[in-house]
Image 1 (cartoon, helix red, strand yellow):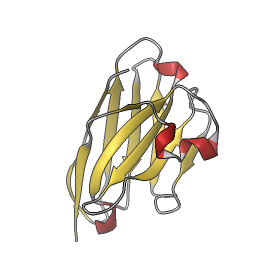
Image 2 (cartoon, rainbow, N blue to C red):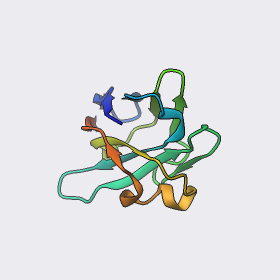
Image 3 (cartoon, rainbow, N blue to C red):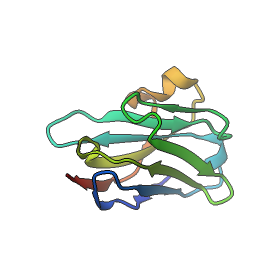
Length: 126
């Protein structure tokens, strides 16, 4: 699976962005998908994940209520709708795929993921 993230950019605090992650291959619907982010000098952290069918989504506490993850299996794409953005949301955002549907705890773990996209930069001005 190859992943291509896009949609990052510069936005003012309080604004919104939608990230997209397009996947290659015909088995996209069998992968759980996640979004992670990494700010300068910090470790990569979990943001959100969604089950293969899209029926289960899980979020980091820091983004719950502001971010929404969704997927369109017909388009091999996963999305991250980000609203009420804060300066602390600024980071490089990565999408990732895992072939193991290990449940919500498993989705939060960086090492659970088999494939990673290249990242897209999100900058939030205060």
